[in-house]
Length: 158
Image 1 (tube, one colour):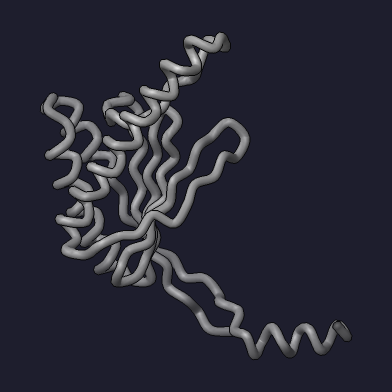
Image 2 (cartoon, one colour; image 1 turned 135 degrees about the vertical axis):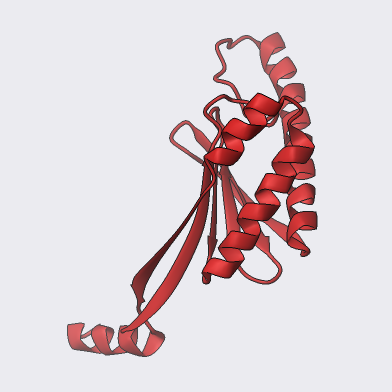
């Protein structure tokens, strides 16, 4: 098996400063749901503006590739033009996790993330707090090639 390098960047918005975080809903009536719909549309607009800032910092485009609801958590994913993707858990606190196959790409994303935060947050104390939590990690994993998968499949008799 071939070893695959994986670098990733994480940020958790513990002070809940990012404007696109979705707070837990405490109301279930129709009027509240309509208001929540409008608020969610506004949050989505703010999230996409944040992504535009990230794209500018990276110097490349991204593509929205979908969203999931897993348990009570909402995830939005974006794929980058030159490789890698970012996943944002938008329930408060927002969690951002970006994945790349090289550390230099992850480092570049971390710098772009800091620039996007600077363009989004006005309160200096919150900005500094969030920027200090950005972490770039690297690990190696074993990647299963198609040929190896075929061999394993033939051994099983499938």
